[in-house]
Length: 403
Ligand SMILES: Cc1cc2nc3c(=O)[nH]c(=O)nc-3n(C[C@H](O)[C@H](O)[C@H](O)COP(=O)(O)OP(=O)(O)OC[C@H]3O[C@@H](n4cnc5c(N)ncnc54)[C@H](O)[C@@H]3O)c2cc1C
Image (spheres, rainbow, N blue to C red):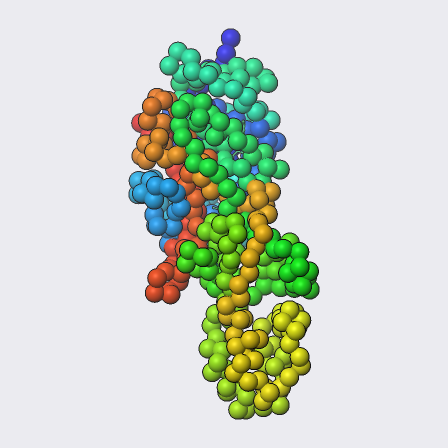
């Protein structure tokens, strides 16, 4: 005989825990299932262990989806202020980092504890190490098969996340289930992910591993982000690279401006006038980390010259490329390190108000399994200003819990 619950949520990540708590607190008998040993494993890793739990400047334009309007209704029903209020009520100290991003002062564990406490308030039954193997339609509800036995529910919420970080339990289960029930799935790809470089360039840049510099990074479609980039043993990472990865296509170039705040020609003219015998290396080291300057000299075979030897032709050849360095990645680090998965369950099959499937009563898809991702930062807009409006998928509430 199958065990019965009014609501079963598959996936105890950010979305699943929040949803289960809401449904439980509205009086429903809720079961929350996860295949892992711990709930909220991605939350624990998020924001470098401090969880970037929301942002002060959230707006629909900060979300990427084939349907850019889809997130409007969820954001109108539950805002960043609601989540900040919840965080305050749980006594969690937080701080704003850059551009409105809010982080826990202490640890991401506090956000997991908050969600677990909310689940307890809703008397949610949480079962870990419980992988759902199959789902079938039965008596207008759903019969779930687990290694431990069968469960029947009239409302089923799929919160199984994307494909990023398979080591943390990610599975394609949600996408397969969507297809099983006739929903379209937008092809997925790793996003918010470091890019990798071809061996010759990687070898030339090896001495820079660990060096971070502020930059403006542009993709071929014109999208640009202004943030730090980080040189790694495999290629390039850092916030600006993670952001641009969603806009880079295989075979394309990225253009890096490593001195976005500097009027380079004027700076060189002033330095040449004031210190004509100063070496080019020492001059550039006033603007950039010494290791990067040394590496740049090696990369372009630049001899040790003084500023008075720097002709306009040599400036164009050796110095100005610092502001338009074209780099062709050979790929990304893939789902292994990607923070999120782009694509997923096509929003056209879902209600934007409740996240219920239009054609399968009682079935819901929420969180990262759906084709919506938030930008931690918006691109630089058309007039070159930084638009303050990041986003986070952690707070998107679906309305299942509301009677
Ligand atoms: C390194 C890193 C840093 C990040 N930093 C941030 C940040 O600071 N701020 C932010 O907003 N976002 C951040 N993200 C993204 C964020 O973690 C995800 O967008 C969010 O966790 C997605 O939540 P989810 O509930 O939809 O899915 P998940 O958190 O992926 O949860 C899905 C759960 O379902 C389980 N599951 C899968 N299949 C089954 C099955 N068949 N049966 C049972 N259980 C199953 C999985 O084990 C998993 O526990 C980061 C992600 C990573 C990887």
